[in-house]
Image 1: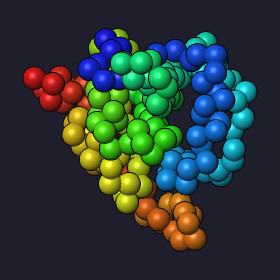
Image 2: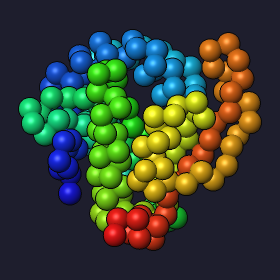
Image 3: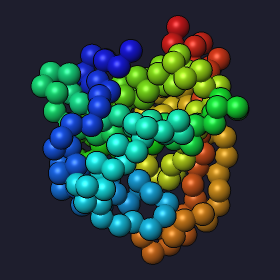
Image 4: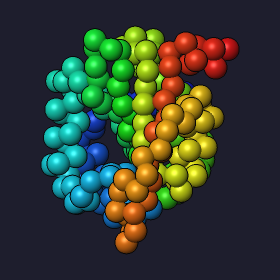
Length: 179
């Protein structure tokens, strides 16, 4: 369930916060990650995110590690889990440039969607993305996400107003896409 060919979903390890804190300074990583104020996280902040999620019924966070050597390459989580409506939002990130565009994102998405639909019985998993984040959109659509709409001029990004696109995948579509 949590292990693919190249990546696996895992728990937070002791030094992960230090790595994530040092990797967060890549503008291509941090700027598209949040539509709110960007601020630096300390190692303790990263640790707190994972520890709080481990006790939560509304959020679940995983580290993403290479199968071959267990090295940390990213994170993925489901948040704002709504039990009544069986829906949640997805967040994913690969802080180091050398770990992007290698298929790790698609494989991680496959693993987290499998978990969300098969273990949490989610009906709908949603995400938001900048329209210019072509690599992310390619990975999302590859695993079956479909664009539902656009919020125009939603975020002030790099000195200009930009749109946010909203994507989703439904449980039935996921099961059909997997076959």
